[in-house]
Image (cartoon, rainbow, N blue to C red; front, side, top):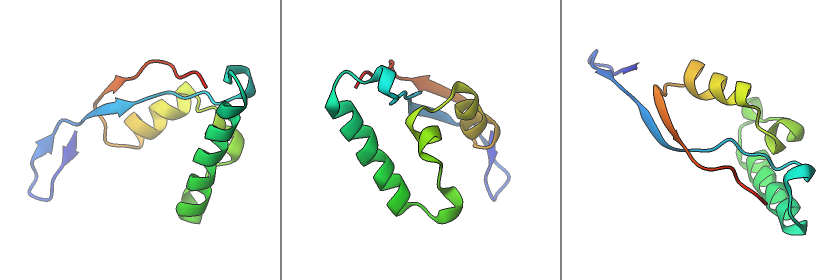
Length: 87
């Protein structure tokens, strides 16, 4: 739950979440590599330095890091996961 400035507690549901795997083993063709490289370049060029991830962590987001980032460190109480992506 997150608390508003007025003290109200709000249950947070993230309705769009995915555990992605853009590693070479999960790419069907060259376009998978192109997509994850483009996606990482956006992250690298648009994020503040203190929020940058190493490329290997970005390419294959681990379940442990997702849980930590979204539920422990973040404010999400429940999430609706999408299916596994294939590139």
